[in-house]
Each structure stands twice: as structure tokens, then as C-alpha cells.
Image 1: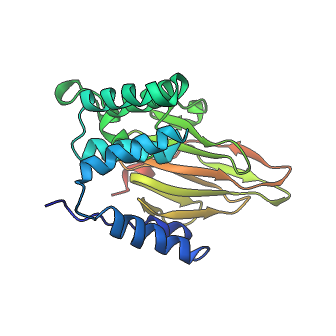
Image 2 (image 1 turned 180 degrees about the vertical axis):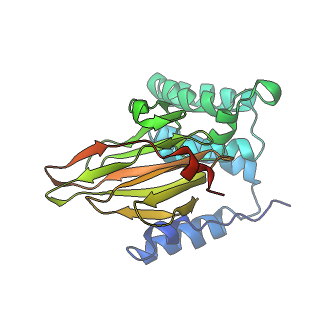
Length: 251
């Protein structure tokens, strides 16, 4: 018997704004359709990947469903055959786009699989490339654009013990930043306040002109979405690194 599929993302992200959509997503799509027994979950995963590929959707939703497919037993050989077959009907550019995502997810298992690979399989957003702002971080971090239109959104991933320097988002009006943890465990701290532990689903609102830092726990990878809030004359001031003593005091 398939393990029952449970989804709460609709209510967590849109419950207040669009409760009917949240209900349809969590209770109908995932609660009923995904748990219908005529098809096993592995088959449903493959159908979903093919449907999204055929529609030209190659964003974070396809990445999530590729990870879901792997987690429900779709092998590297099987997903390669599925994408190749689908490419014959949907077009070569779509095949290349989906293979780019799948190749990052179906990494070799065992000794050849890295901690980065394993963490990528745990989160639905891409880890991306080494962070171009790495000079303002202690340790290794990564940076991946999620949305570059309307509201810019970036996924920032921290290796264990990595954190950014103290910094301030300046703005004459508006401004600031919004963080949403999407995996692992980390911390956020404002100057003069106690650190706040961040785990998957934690939301942090950072007003303009507040000095702060955020980063991974010593024993965990950590990833958050970062959204810069539009403001007048907005800029970021990078300051000193978090002291080693203060960081080591965190649990």
C-alpha cells in the first residue's frame, strides 16, 4: 500500500490570501487525487513530470516533482528514458531543460554522493552556484535565482557553520528583506536581540535599518529564500563578521 500523501504548502503559503486555492491544493489535489489507488505513487510522479515538461514548466515546481519522483523509486535510468521519450513529442529545448534539472537530482548514490547532493534532494529549490557575495560570508554559500521578474527572489544555501557578516538594508522609505527557510537549520539575529532559530517554514521579516546576520547551524546545511523589499534609495551595507565566540555559543 502506498504511504498516504499529505500536503500543507497551500495553507502555509496561501491560506490567508486564497483559502479556496489552498483547500484545492492540499485537500483535493494532494489529499484525494494523489491518494487515489488506481495508480501507484511512482506512476503518478512520472505522469506529473511528463505533464509539466509538456507544458514547458521547468521552474521550482518541476524540480520539486523530480525530487518527489526520485524519492518514490524512479531510477536514473528510468527518468532518462522518460525524458528522452517525452522529448520526441514535446521538443528538444524542453528535453534539454528537464535533463539539466534531473541530472542534478539523480546524482550517484553512496560514496560518490556529496553532502551538497544530499541536501539538494531535500529541498525543492536549486542550490545554484557559489555565492557572488561570498566575500561577505564566513564559509561556503551558494546562490540561485528563483524569480527575476516582479519580485526578485533568490535561494541562498549555506554549508554547515557558514554565515554572512552583520549587515544593514538601508532605505529612506520601505525597504528591508524577507527570509523564508526552505531546508536545514540556521539562525537569524538582530543586533541587541537573542538569535532566532530557523527551520523549514520559518519566516523572518527584516525592517530597513536593522543590523543583523543569518546563517547555518554548526551541524546543519541551511537554505532560505531571500526577497529584497522595494524601497526608496535602497542599498545594503556590509559590516564586520560575526565573532567566533558569539557564533560558538549557539546550540
